[in-house]
Image (cartoon, rainbow, N blue to C red; front, side, top):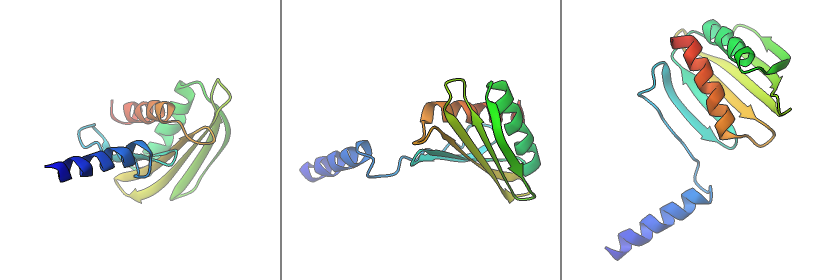
Length: 130
């Protein structure tokens, strides 16, 4: 019993000190296959075609009142660099995974910020699936 307590304590300490990647998976959110937040980047796999996700991302950026500084895309990848009202840089990269899956990486600020990244993720999801 004491051994289990020590193992649990070590696991909690590693988790809280970020020695272990913070990973979240959501299978219950409509349209999202999985997502994780790691080293300042929120990675989301949307169950949607690449071009639809690209268009939804552009609309989400506009809806969230961000100013686009740079945007580029080709057949399998895309990137948007924008500024938020607080002047933080937002970088959103898209990658074709399959005909029905697109990976999106979201970084807010230089080191990343999970809260605003989640807001962007949800705005894209709403546009795609509601």
